[in-house]
Image (tube, rainbow, N blue to C red):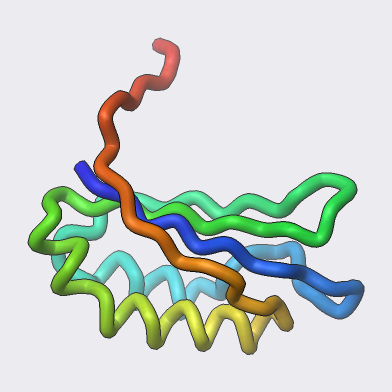
Length: 96
């Protein structure tokens, strides 16, 4: 599994609700997308999004669509995109 992590700067005008249902629908329609997390910093002006992909190939193939959705989300939520990085997921576990 692979992940794309985007870092954002929020402002007092920023939404803390996360992306719209329309944005999420579009994200999950991209082939290979396996999940997403959206995090807002507590007591900071930082936010993150983490999207999960089933392979390096689908991560790479999703870049253009992901860039478009990221831009739409940042405009919708009034947040600034600071950085986008890609990672191989080497461990994942949630308690039973």
